[in-house]
Length: 164
Image (cartoon, rainbow, N blue to C red; front, top):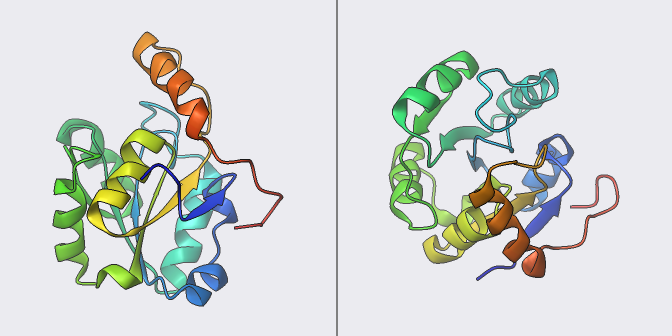
């Protein structure tokens, strides 16, 4: 339930070649601390470059976020991505909506995120593969610090560069 299918240091290490070997044609993407830092309206250039690489390779992409519409809409529009806000992760609700819109079977999908108790657990409950990436930066709020402290017991080891 809490063990990711694949582990990368960050999204930029996920390559079209890796996804192709695994039969993955679509990615459901978390927003905060996966594509950009928490509550940041601007993605880093590395995320923009990675997204362009994925799009050029024909990988279908969609944001699935627990954030509200006001947070997700401008970010997703900037990236040219469809999105599901208020995803209710770890519940399958947001993932199910996104899967229907992408039109891909579970075996061709994976979800990428930085949290064990929302992203990885949500994938387990939904029946799709999870791609865990380590957070871009530590969150400072008390609820996140508490969640991350508990999460430590379930965190995978950091892989070597481009390990997958």
